[in-house]
Amino acid sequence: MREAHRTKTPLGARGRRASPPSMTLVFTATVLLSLVLVLAGCSSEEAPARSPLLLLFGVDAATWNILTPMMQAGELPTLKSLVDRGSYGILKSGVPIQSPQMWTSIATGVVPEKHGITRFTAEIPGTGREVPVTSNMRKVKAFWNILSEADITVGIVGWWPSWPAEPVNGFVIAQRAWPVNWSRHGIPFGAARDESGRLIVEDFEGRTYPEELYAEFEPFIVTEEDVTASELALLFSDPSFTDPARQFHARWVFAKDKTFADAGLAMLKRHTPDVFAVYLQGTDVVSHYYWGYQREEGFTVSPADERLYARVVRNYYRYVDGVIASYLEEVGEDTAVMIVSDHGFETKRDLKERWERGERIRTEEGGKDVPWDHGVDGIFIMAGPGVRKDNRLPDMSVVDVTPTMLAYLGLPVAEDMDGVPGLEAFEASFLEKNPVTTVPTYETGGPRGDEAPMESPMDEGIKEKLRALGYIE
Image (cartoon, rainbow, N blue to C red; front, side, top):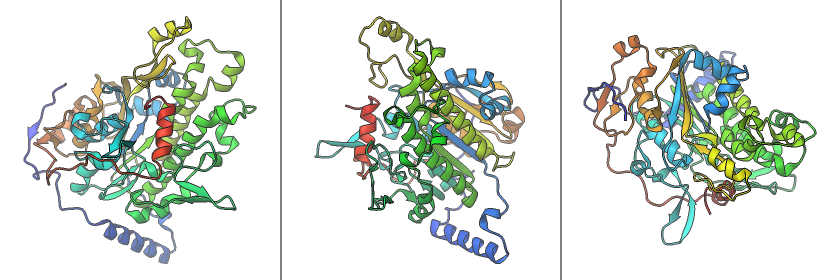
C-alpha cells in the first residue's frame, strides 16, 4: 500500500461542524424558496445554480481497454477532455472481483472484510433463503455518512448497494427505486400493470431518503418497454435489428441507467448538493453479452453478427460519455469531477485459445463459459481545480477513492481506512494550501451493521439477473 504524508488531527478539530439539519427542515426550506421564486415570477428551475464541489460517476466495469482506443479515435470527447485536463490511471479492484463488495470499498475506503459486504447475496437467518445484500449490512460509514456529519450536503443516486436508503444531509435514491431489475414478460419485478397498461409500482420503504422524494423520482422511471427505437439505435447500429431476445440485456440496463441519469441530473439541479454521486451499470452488462462480437478483441465474427452487435459495447460507452457531458453542462468550472470503476473488463487470452480449440472453459470472476469477463484494472479519472493536468497516475486501489475525496474536500482521512489519498493527483500548490490531515477513525457512536439482509419486492428479479450473469447459482 502506498504511503501518504499526513498530519494528525484529533477527531472534531477540522471538518466536523454542527450536526446537519433534519431533512424535513431542508425540504421545507426548498419549498419556501420555490414559493418565493414563483411569487417573484420565476420557477425553481430558473434559480441561479450553485456549483457542487464534486461530481462522482461510478461506471461499472469501465476499462481502459475500451476507453483508450475510443478516445484516440475521437469517439469520447467528454472523457478525453477530462483526461487531458486532469489526472488518470488504473484503479485496482480486489479479489474476488464482485461489484457489491468493490462499490462498497470505493464508498468506505476499507476492504470487504471490514465493511461487511462480502458476497452478492446473504441468508435470511434461520430460513436457508438467500437475498441480495442490503445497505444495512454495512459495518462502517460510507463517504455520504462522513460528509453529512461534516455538514456537507450529498446526493446519492443508484449506488450498489444503497437500499434501504440511509438518512443523510441531502438525499439518496437507492438502486431499488427503479422497479425493473429483470423481466422478460413486460411486468417488472416490484411492479404491475393495470387494465389500461399503466405501470403500478409496489410501494415499500427505503427507496429514497427522504421518503417523500420518491414522488419527485417516479416520473423519471423508464422501463424496458419504454425504450424507443431511436434510443435503441444508439446501441444497435443496424436499424433492421429487431430481435427482442438479443436486444433484451442492452434494453433493460439502458432503461435503468437512463432512469437514474435523468433523475439524478434533475435532482442535482433542484437540490444542489455539495457532493453528488451517480452509478451507471450498463457498461458492465453489455460487455458480458456483446464483448465477443468485437473484432478489435481478436474474435472471429460473421458479417451479419458484426453488423448487428459489434458496436454495442462501444456505443454504450458513447452513451455514458454523453451522460457525463450533460452533467458538466450544468456545473461550473469550480466543480471537481471524479470517474471510477469497480473493476475493468478484458478478454482472457489464455482461455480464448482453449475456447477456440473447442475446449470447455470457465472464467473465475463470473463463472461464465466464454473467454471474457471482469479484469482487475479499473479506471480512475479526476479533473477540476487543484488537480494536475494531463497527469498519468501510479496505480491506485478501490479503497483509495474515499480517502482521495476526503483529502480534496479538506476533511481528515481516517487512520483505520485501508486506502490512502492519491496525492499525486493534486497540484503542489493545492497540497500546500490544503495539507492532508488524519483522525484515528470516523467509526464513532457505537457499532453499526446488521448480519441479516432486508427483503424487498425486487429480490427475485435481482437474483435472476445475477444467475444469468453467472454470479450466483
